[in-house]
Structures are given as structure tokens and as C-alpha cells.
Image (tube, rainbow, N blue to C red; front, side, top):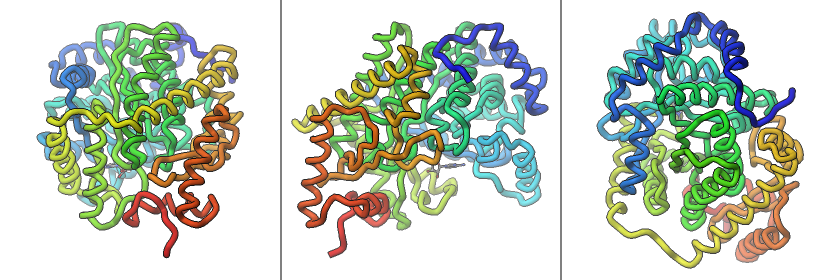
Length: 482
Ligand code: 5AD
């Protein structure tokens, strides 16, 4: 399949649209005009992009939970329960819908109705259809985003935008590499060009749809330069299709300086590449994800991880933070646990909001490293694609120029290995084919060597394993047992 970063023509879009809508009965006859009419009728407080922009201007950090259950009324009840403590709300989609398995989602709805509680791990928006989904938007006074993990989200996007949702997470790389095994990048990038083009068509009617590429990727020791490169590429792909509101994300890695540097450089580098590629007319915000790796089972310990994530979001000046719950180690949280995550995050953000920004010397070094890494990767991606960022992205994954640690996708090389340094920052243990400058690679080696010396062991794969489990066992760095 040939792929390029070019705006999908209206003709090609509408040809494809007929097939997209035919995939499930709730898509049949879906009217764009009805979506435009309803979105235009929404007050400012229900418009995601407007609320994000205001927070950016005021330098406030917004908080947003994850939440989704099988049935519409229960889902509305859940969101209402979380509404007061949240600035932004989600509708988290279930795993069947994410894989376009609507028949099984239907079965899950029936069984949930019979059981009297949710037997799905999220909200099956496609099966419920646009009218039922719109009841959510009608019932909630804050903006609501669709959050999922869907390689082919075309029908989900159609139904969501018609229903009145005006923020949509995901992207052709970030919703493939961590979520799918066998979907090709050509396919998922194509299918997401459709989603972005649909957002662009709403934009042509004066309706802003906020788009949020999924920052954390595998959520496991992902170096900032890797997720930044993906976020910037997905941002560029979205801008080309006419998207004007972008929120780029990053998942907390655990070292304070590295995490603050990551959020700050994400914004700087995105502006740099967007403008360099000729895009001027867009709104950019950032999202910080509280720790996405393994959590402690003990709820008091989990609160500590949650609160530290809130603190870093505040120090870094992220526009919003996605909040974890004390039930993270167990699975889908109860509504009470969900609310507790929000409250502990709110408490620390408000306490830190009044303090001035952190500006320690190490921050400049860390930011400089990330800038140099992203510049090296972006130029290799562009070169691989002959100047085309979509083609470049596909080639970059084939060649290991971008290599996401611990990702399930077959199209990801999986040669690069990360490990923590002595201070817990994520560094490179084995670079695989990463096209980084020699002195940057030497820096990573030195940082890892410092830790190894302190632990009286050679840098080894066991360190990587120890690091993966460290936080759930109460530490940042996976030290050997003594
Ligand atoms: N409700 C609440 N949280 C959810 N997550 C996934 N689905 C739901 C849901 N329906 C959370 C997981 C994990 C993150 C990736 O999303 O607990 O923290």
C-alpha cells in the first residue's frame, strides 16, 4: 500500500465514508449536517479546545480521569459522580470496540443489562450509536473526550463527532504500535488520516475538534525522544488533514528532571517542526500521563505514585494531567477509587500552583539531550521518506530509526533496550538501530556505567527487568537485592 502525507480529497473521503458507515447498523445514514448542527449548538464550557486554551493562557493544569462502563445510564451516572472533581471528562472505550468486534460488544451490552453491572471494560460507543451517545454530552456540563486504543477508529470517530464529542485521542502510530500485533503501519496511518480528515471537515464548518496523539506508547521505560518523535509525526499528519487543535502527550518516566524536561521540550520541538513544515495556524497544548507502568497494590503507596505524577505535571506546566487511581494494580477502578485519584491529584496541583517554576541546572542539560535526539531522529525519518513524513514513519519503523521499547506490534523492530541510570532517568542500554550522534550515545553509556559501578554489577539485561518491576515494589530504580 502506498502512503503519503497529503490531504485526502473530499471526493476520496466521501467514497471511503460510504464503506466506513456500512460496517455497523448505527453508522447507516449518519448525517454530517446533524453533527455540525449539534456541535455548533454546544456552549463554550462543553468545547474541549476552548477549555484547554483557557487553561494554557492562565497557566493552569487541568485534571482528567479515565472512565467507561457498558451501559449508557450507568456511564452517565459514573461521569456525573466524577464531574465536580474533574476539569475534563473521558469516555473510555471497551476492548471489543477498539478491535472493531461490534458483535461481541453487543453481546457484552446484553449480558451487562442482564447482570445489572458492566461486563465490558469500557463504553461501546459504536453499538450504542449517535443518539444514545449524545445523552452523555447532554447530561454533562464539561467537555468529554473519547479515549480508546483503536487502530481503525473511523466509524468510532464518525459516531462520536455526530454525538457531540469534540476531543478524540489516538493516532496512526500511537494506536497501532502499543495496541496491535499485526496491523501494518501503512494501514493504521491511512485509517487515521481519515479520522483527521473528518476532524478537518468539521473544522471547515467552524467546529474545533481537539486531537490527542497517545503519548505514553508502551508505557514501559519509553525515552522522551522516542515518544516525542511519534507525537510530532502524528501532529504533522493531523495538521495536513486540517486539524487545528492538538494536544501532545508524554508518559511520566519517574525521574523529576527528565520528566520536566520532556514536557517542556515536547512543546518547543513540536512548534519547531510544525512551523518548519509550514503550519502556522494551530493551537498546541500538552498532556502529562501519571505513571503508566506497574503500580503498587497497596493503595497508600499507589497514592504516593499518583501524587508525584501530579507534582511533576505542575512543575512542568503541562496543560492537563491524566489521573491514575489507587486501584490501578487491580484493574478497572470503582467510582470511589477514581474520585480519590482525582482528589489527591487536585490537592498537590493546587499546592504547587502557587509556587514558581523549577529551574535547576540539570534541566538545561536534559533538555539539550532531548533536542539533539529528536533532531537526529526527525532528520532520519524525513530522509527515509524522501521528504514525506508518512512514508518516512513507515520506513523509520522498518529500519529501527524509531523503535518503541516493549511494544507488541510486528512492525516495530524491538531491538532498542532502555534502562534507568543512577538517578532513575531512562537511558539507552542497547541502541539497536537508533540514529543518534556518537556523543549522545556515549552520554547514555556513561550514565548507565555510573549506575552499574554503584551497584557493583555490569550493565545487564537483569537491570532492565529489575527496573520494570521497581515502582510496583516501592522504588524507582531496580537495585539488586543486598
Ligand atoms: N475505566 C477506568 N479506567 C480505565 N482504564 C482502561 N479502561 C478504563 C475504564 N473503563 C485505565 C487502566 C489504565 C489505563 C491505561 O486506562 O486502568 O490505567
